[in-house]
Image (tube, rainbow, N blue to C red; front, side, top):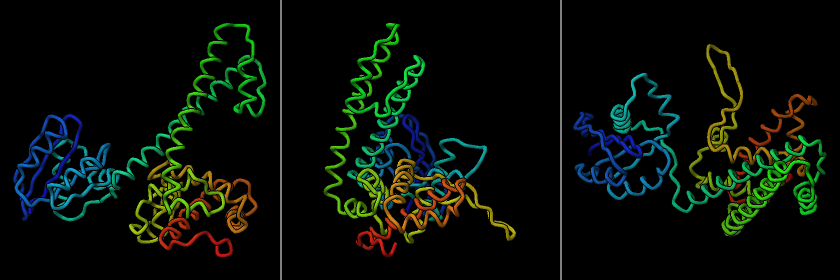
Length: 336
């Protein structure tokens, strides 16, 4: 068995090979595309195990490497930085470190979903970016109105509000052009979001996990599909507490000499899912008496603790969703 560390780059990659005793056999750089990298790996004597760091397109490379290697490990980039923090960094050094971790069986691995799930996640993130862009355009449009001392109606983005907006007359032609362009952009993003959500709904309606999560008060289709896409295989979480770490909703911890300091949440993992679940937590507090009781317990009648309380509720919802996905049981209000 040989152990191969692969530092993968778009233009320059590095391969480091060690034998079954951990001794270095070869180390070299490869200039060119990933196809050329795969061609070089074909020359490595079989069988071999290989490790590379997760980055853009890692799923595609993982599937290709599975066809030639007896074992493929994808390393978590954040954990690697903590393990190998050094002032000396190069492609060859990184490849060597990956090969050593692989030989020692100490690779901090990540879950690699299949192509369908990766495409599902990509569409969810695409929708999130569209929403952010549309929000920015709407904010710019409201700023334009404030600059002209115009008070906009509260429901500006429905059909009636958009008609009012288009009917406004400005004293300056340049302001009119800006208004027209902003309105066009809002309409265009609305159309794109409608198309994206139509495709996401097709997937969600056919997925039992999404339907199960939607039984929770306050959890809508966008939140349910995001959680399901990123959880993917519920059984890979050994405990329901581990899902909080995965989505970065647990506090930072510094424990030493009998003192335990807890800080802000870690914010690791997919931020899109974390944001959606926090938003859904507000709805759950309004719609579920049991969830509201948890919120009030953390709040302690102190308005300054609202953010802390809603994050605690979001963490609770994450744990509940994982438990539901693992057991297949729908939401039960009486046991919440």
